[in-house]
Image (cartoon, rainbow, N blue to C red; front, side, top):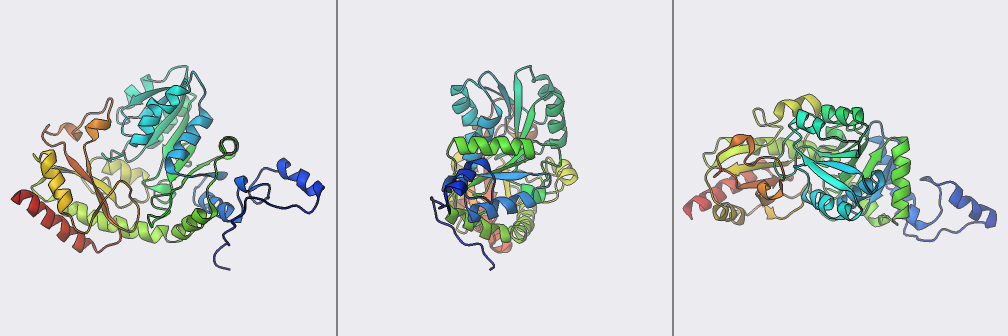
Length: 376
């Protein structure tokens, strides 16, 4: 059998009452208890994700990437604790820090991940965890991840990495010193823009805590979605390699355009963060951003609207290319924008998610959209 069956069952039957009594005593994948703890389809996905995450003892599944972030933070933090969150985090993470966690009596403090001394000075006796993301959401900064994780450990705090961009094939987070690594499986692992799911992987002690809290919250994913994620996982490596190669070609082309002030693609030699990416990462993906030179928001939006091969949407990591207008200044507390001390006029950008289309066709589409933007 190539594919594990899709087990759609909430109720598992037992041979007798003695076997029924055994169910609650052995809380582990591979042992039936009740559908909320999963079945072979979900277990197969957990096992596969754990196998590709060096240093992981297990993986917990969540119904979305945001649910994974919330599940992890609600496991590690208690009322009165302080969370340090990178200032360039995914906006739902930032919103969580200002809303959900605040409601639970947890304080979130934002920091610039490129400023190690300021980051280290921010720790206090109540700091229990640090949430990082690299490259930064929208703006693609690459920070010194091993150093940030090491400082957190020295300060007695747990380090969590949202590793959706690179995944374990591009950055082995646990081996690099992080305590928990999470992903939005909606993106690369799903790969086909037809499922919502998240995951968190960790060593033995933290995995047990994550698993227990997820069960207490009633967190479960459908077996049908787990089967779709397993399907995507089988082609993950080949898709990432193609998308990365195409993204590099497009980023290089954009870097030569007069309309573009800066290409924010850490895989591109000379781009911000490239040396750290080259040192610490073993792969990339098709997601990057660029900033226009002296173009206002309306002009940037005309460019996006003129694209024909790119869809306009919030997600990424699927087979299809997407474009999203961005202005990261709206989602910052302490980091400057534009990046690198750029001109104030050069603040309107676009995030591109490069899919599996021919990169030459995508370049031609971008070129015609630039022409229509200039003509307007």
